[in-house]
Length: 398
Image (cartoon, rainbow, N blue to C red; front, top):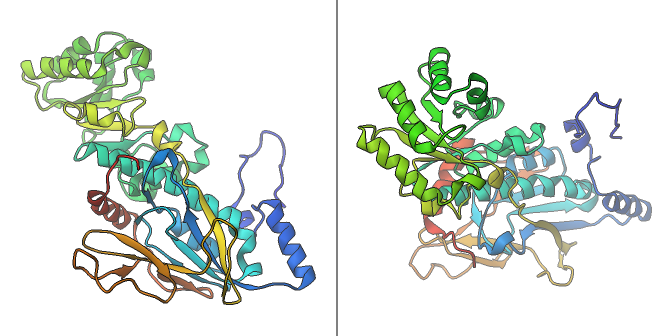
């Protein structure tokens, strides 16, 4: 039983043990379990995890949260098939398949959907931002917008989705990378001057860390950029604009003006970073000037991907609720053009795709009655896989 504890002496989160013991469950699944046990009506089923429609009219998503899903399921007497974590998938394509007695895994539906839905939403948003940015740097700055216990999960999925770095120390430690960040407005406010804040940063912080000045706290961005460049000289790696929306006007024009003034004075190597309200829709108009993006809320609070777990087979017979195609399915993909096709289980599509390449099955065996069948990939390998696939998809919604 999840206990509240004394007021003010705990975080309002479930423990690992509570999740794995099936306590984080919608009550109707718990009641279903009680009824089926009382009626002795357990059945051997096949369940598929599918997104029927993506948010905001998008046409693809990035599968994430699979490693945690495997951790949740690996001690159960079931079989599991899944696409590789990081796979870009489309509507109605099953990304995860569970086969076993329903009572062995049914109470985990709430938890596994939560793992997949939020992680995939974050990874998908990060991938869309990276797709829009191209070869420009994208950093995850959004951990502060969500519960702190979620920070490592959010930033891991932002990273595998394509972000080049993350801000939170613990998240970066778990990823095996250096945390990324610049200077907060707080430092400038307390020291009272932008140049003094950058100089203090330079005196105290490890020289290996790039010196990036935040130039929108007190004065006009153009003049602050000139002042810090003249004060820091070659030590200055970049400047960051986090200009409030109420002061931006035409933000691109401000950025172009800053770039012009820096270049005119011989500071062409100084990079321009921007943050604050950035997403994949704003990035393309800024790409001609900006070198790096710090993206916060739009990634950390990304729309979840609305996975559902659907029973599609009971005791070997195809069956499903209305609106869902019955029977277990497989998803094949052309490795050349990345076209996908869904077919009934045990059947194959035409031997080759229209482009001439042979199809491959995206659903792979992962678990077999508590035995892990594969080595789960490293987060860096997942990220590389996502980036490689981004060349085959478009940002525009359907």
